[in-house]
Structure formats: structure tokens, C-alpha cells
Image 1 (cartoon, helix red, strand yellow):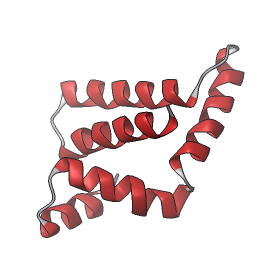
Image 2 (cartoon, one colour):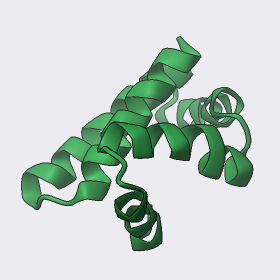
Image 3 (cartoon, helix red, strand yellow):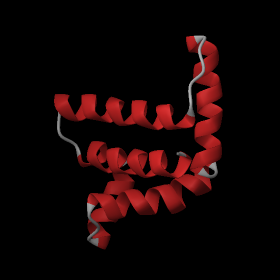
Image 4 (tube, rainbow, N blue to C red):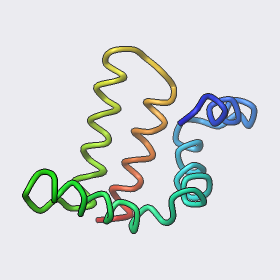
Length: 94
């Protein structure tokens, strides 16, 4: 997520969860398609590389861990927003 998205969130007075909801349902869906379909494609690609079946739910959980790792290194609103967004996607693809 770029700073432009965070700036928009601050302008709108959104919480990180509200921002994540907007990004998942609007901005990112417009860019990448529905999260369920997008994460199914990612899961298929990861399955090829890892040589074992990966689910779209596992993709979402791994993306959360990526953002947790980044947040542990240095706080950034983007990390927390993306954690919320990936949790929402995990629920959507479950």
C-alpha cells in the first residue's frame, strides 16, 4: 500500500480497520479482482514453487505474518492496515 492510501485514510478519519475494509472491497478489488479469485491464483503459484498444495487461506495467513515481521522491525500504519485487510481476506476465502 502506498502513502497515498494512508493519506486518504487520514483525510477521511478512518481507523485502520475501516481503511482495510475500503481497500479490500474497493481499491484493491478494482486493481486485482475479487480477493477470493486473486488469492486462489497466488495459492496455485505458491503450490508450484513450494511443491505442495497451498490454500488461499494459507496465503492470507502468510501475508499477515509478512506484515507482522515488518511491523516488528518498524511501526508503520500500512503494516497494521494490511494485517486487518489480510485477516478480512482470510475470512472471505475460508
